[in-house]
Length: 294
Image 1 (cartoon, rainbow, N blue to C red):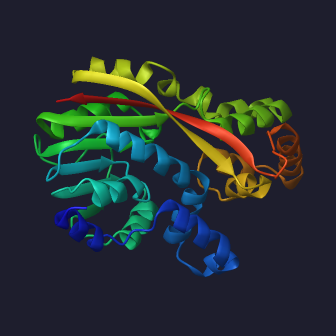
Image 2 (image 1 turned 135 degrees about the vertical axis):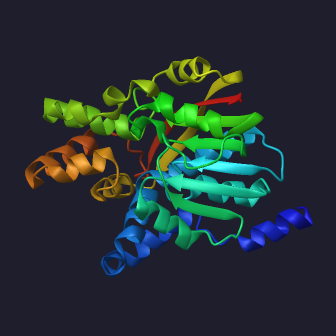
């Protein structure tokens, strides 16, 4: 490890997703005494952050941004992607923006590195100067932006000529098995659940759609691929409990239903998930990733 990288790592005090997951398991009811932002952040890490972190590692390696660059993380969430950039990519500076004040608060608690600057803001109206950023990244957020094209145009506006833009999204339609099992079971019990299913709600998550969109807005040297990771749950509770956290479309849907429905859905998943002899559940998750230059 280079001295410069070692110094940057020493300045970084963020919690890896697996550490947050462990903390969330251990402290249980104590979370009720913590502020809502921190609780919300931990709930997200338990539900999705631990898996998006694995995708982000591969994504950043594929994006291949040189050291000493100014980065922008659009839709930074709890700061997982920002933390990885600080740890391994030696940024000159990184600006991290999210529309959720709870997530920004969580990220600021977790990451105290002076190279990182967190702020609440919208992807489709970035309050940044044009041609001011070397590398823009956005992980798992464009599905939730009313007009994804506007957000990408904003990314393009703030990026320096020749700078890199990289985006990744879960393949909710076919490739995110933890959710596919959930929604298929939910719809079987109540067809109205279809209107909450991300695979139906977010057409941009389907194969080729994200690549077409970034070509349409004018990015150059466009490349696209898929990243797959294993999502191994220790047991059924490791799979099920994060759905009770009210953070994310599926958890919010689940907790809006009555206890009788929740119990039926839990029973259905216990019978449909591929539970191994040791109780573990081995699934996979796929993300579509794209990159291009301004």
